[in-house]
Structure formats: C-alpha cells, structure tokens
Length: 363
Image (cartoon, rainbow, N blue to C red; front, side, top):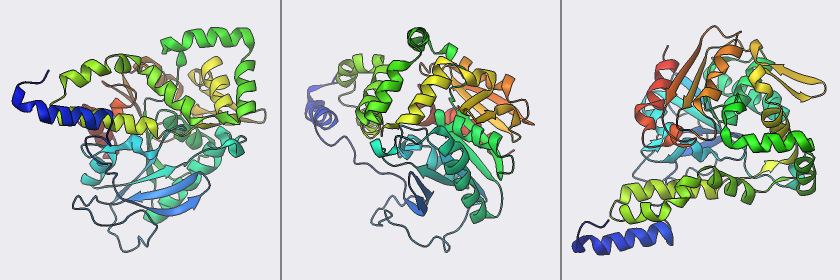
C-alpha cells in the first residue's frame, strides 16, 4: 500500500498512467535498421542504443560504415509475436544485453497477418524465411550465425537446421521451445476434445477466418497468465508508489496488445502436429504429406532453456530435446525461473537466462 500521505499524489499519478494513460514510461525499443525486407520477413540489424535520443532509426540506411561485433546472433520470434519479445524495455532487453557483451543481434520481423496470408505454412519459415535470414546474416559477417529463438521460434530454428544441413549455423539456443506438449497441463482437455472431433472445428475456423485474428491471440496470452490478470488490482494497490514495478507491468501489457495473428495453415499445423499428435516429442514432424523433418538430422550445438514456473511450456517439456537431438555434438539443458515471456525478458532473466546464453555462445 502507499507508504504515507506525502506519497499519495505520486501514487495516484502512477496508477492513472498505468491504468488509463500512456504507461509509466514511453516505449524505447533498441534502434534497428532494415537490411532486407521481404513479405513477413523484414530482417533488421540492431544498433547500440543511444539513450540520449534524437536519431530516427525507423528507416533503412547504409550499415556498411557501422562497426561490427564478432558474433552475429539471429533472434527468431514465434508466430503471433513481435520482436519486442526480445526487447521489452531498457533493463528487460536481451537485445541490449547481447550488444553490451560484444554480440551483434539481428531479428526477423514478421509484421501483421491477414486472411490473404491464409496459405502460409510452417514450411515457409523452416525452408525459406529462417534459412534466408541465416544466409544473409552469414554473408554480412563472413561466417556462421548463432540463433536464439523463443517458444515456437526456437522450434522453427531447429527444424530449419535439421532440414538444411548446409546452413551456416554456429549454434542454436531455444528458449522454452514446445517440444513435448504432454507436460502442458491446460492442453490436456484440448487434446482430449481434439481426439473426439479430429480437430475439425479448428480446421473449419481457420478456413473460415483465414487464420487466428490478433484479438484471439491476445486474449489467449492473457488467459494462460490468468493468475496475473486476477491479481492485477492487488498488484496495482501494492505497487502504486513503485514506478519500476508498474513500468514492467505496462511493458508486458503493451507487448500483449501488439501481438499479431496466425496464418490459417500455420495455426492448423501447430494444432494438429504439435498439440494433438505431439509429433515433436518423437523428433519427427510432418509439415506436408511430402515433407517431413527429423530433428535428429540437426548437427549444430544446441542449448535448451526451460523454466520450472512456465505454465505454457514447462521445463520438463523442453528437456525432452535431450533425447531426440541425437545428431547434435553438444546438447545442453538449463533450468531457470520465470513465466513463458519472463524467462526471456523478465526481471530475473538478467541473472539466469542471459548468463546461460552468453556462456554457451562464448564456448
């Protein structure tokens, strides 16, 4: 609660800004430039943030004059997310942390999806978008690329590496990749219902709408963090005077509000192959009748990071990768704390997830 009467005006301003205003602080994403733009594949290169402000980094410009770090790192978000998952705000930014430690991060921005994108499938990412970005970044640095992917982004990166062994990939770090869905408790009823219906209701819905609208994605993300939503009023009351705590909360709210939707075919594949059939748990996924990818064919070092407090992708589901990535010369698993997003950019990530990533990249 508010500590004393003298703090009341500041607490009221904080609560108003967090609940009805523009937030405790304005958005301050790390500056980036587009080096290659394709439909749903805008490859962006991050620069050293200038906290003094004043520069406009929203448009592409020549990057050849910029100093280059030695280790390029390609960040791969999942579908249904923006690059902000790696750069929530200053202090909660894997991007800034990598730059501060001599790495050069890049990210793929998928943009928005509409019903016109209904035919985009996961194979568009595993066999085109991710490989093309890897090759472009490798060409920029004349050497192999480290990949860091969050959630489904980590899965897409591993499938791309397994499908195309010639990709110049130095390593893959997968943050909370949904490998074995049997450990995600709330998916149990969905899997049971899907077995009875064959998933026809999802097939019909995705065909009718052309995909999953962004509003559904945002609601779904809030539902999986239902405890956070239910305790929000109490959190606000307890932290009315704590601008930092409220800034973290509003940054997550801003990220959730920016989530794009899913293309119809991609969502159907996720539902059918990852949720109903749990194919990744066996290391083989069928993307099309004529296209199957075996994770055992991945041959680069892999770091898997899972959280014991992640409700969406529990650590046990991530750990399954140790058993199926048999072609990798070095597979490691690290267990951290934090929610599904929190393990990437939460307040504890700087002392758990980020050091684990850097240690692995520096090996």
